[in-house]
Length: 189
Image (cartoon, rainbow, N blue to C red; front, side):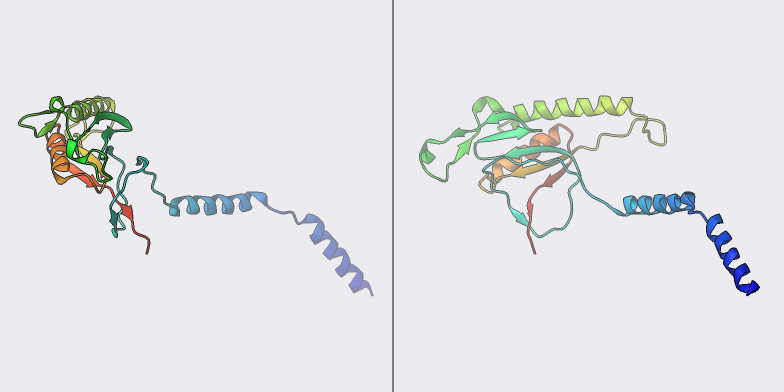
């Protein structure tokens, strides 16, 4: 009988001395949160679209990196969400559903190959990027600011002519943009 009383008393003492250790539980929780944050990856691109634009469809699974963007529709051209020029409608396409558009004469130079408003906007954006790179602490091996990347995303309507795309690429290359990314809608499997 004495033995059972001692056993009961020892059980009560163990129960009274045992406490929940919050410090170790918080450590485990922090490790789980850090793991989840590191393993969770999202891409945040700021590519916008214009209402009514018909974008080509692609089967590519690549995600485009964030870069400056030109949007071309048969009606106008925007650079970084600001309209930089409007096309004029040709007389032959007046009133038809498949309207044909051209550049205004004052919008082109260099033998009608370079688009002046686009060139001006691209140069302004490049100058701004170079000023920011000068102020940045990121440097190359020789201690100079990192070079200008010159990446341009082009989002063109299906109805835009190849000649217009070629003029945009020529203009961008003249402004120092050497890499072009054409944006398309991802086809659902």
